[in-house]
Image 1 (cartoon, rainbow, N blue to C red):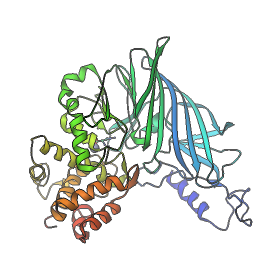
Image 2: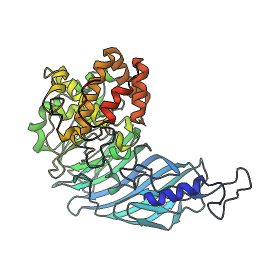
Image 3: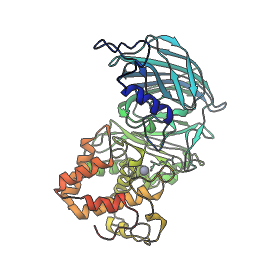
Image 4: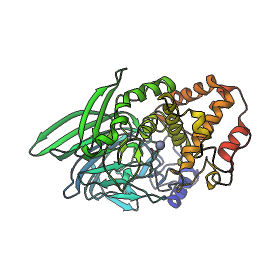
Length: 467
Ligand code: ARG
Ligand code: ZN
């Protein structure tokens, strides 16, 4: 991962040594082949992501039998070379690979940790589109995170719960696993008849033959790999539309129906409220997947359809749907920017609570789980803009992130604040952005120098006292 990446960057940046025997430094325009970086360079997860190419589309065609937990899969990755490549990596922690082809040519490959290393021949020139096909089969499984939680491919009593933030998707799909490389996705999932496979995007077809049902799910807007899901189980499915016409697909484990009824009923109202506040809903459809995966214990804002490991509360549903704007459409450039996801979704949840007749956002800001925490609490002892991989899903990015937004609202006023929120969604739609971009946008929209403000809220430890 990181060590190899450093070496590779040196080779790419070098103007002296040809990166490979095929390089012809004297001839202008002649290809200069080298290996793509083995890392996206994100310090929280240095093995994640790769360099040298930009994925356009992932197509995964697979079967899965919950009785044996056996998966047989063919993944087709379409990418554009961003340098002349004689080698590149994909991130993959899934079952045994039997074959890799690039543009139809079979290739040797090696695996090293989460790196699937491919040496394409013919080599790949900058700007050319290429297609990688990876065939694999076996039993995929979960991945443990720095905070001890699990993600990836999590078998359940009737299927599999599939989540990937921040590093779970390579458990079942070879990817360029970093939010800075978004792509469209299509999943063709074959499962025993009676079960439902639910993916991101829209259902193109569902067909049962010889005791197996094949579902085809199509994600038409760019998506970060950590937001992919193809969750499988015994689900009740309901389809409807919001008042403004967005299709809603809800799949729910029958054991979660009563505990999730209020949250499910409010999905259309939440989507429309957030669209009024943040700008148009960014995707072609919405919904939710409410499963039973007791060992997971959290929900995830999987794109278009958040997935819940237990009964969905109204607050968590609002949080995950708000992430469709903040987190999914606009993703973090680095994992240290996680407050841009979790703080925004938490603040949206506070706003929805107020809209729905509950506590006002000011009351929530001042409560004992937020600003009311003692200044001596460990809660204030971590830098919000760089919480580290163990704390990235603790209440620090969530609650202090939301507090930062509420304090900003007081500082810049209602009009500028909502221009900032909408501008953030519109300006980085389907892309990614960093904390510095948010600071710059806030200063531009408010006309204020906010360096001291953001310093105390984002970059310093301790409970802010004046801002
Ligand atoms: N982003 C999710 C949420 O706030 C939480 C994901 C937690 N992931 C983890 N591996 N612990 O809705
Ligand atoms: Zn969240």
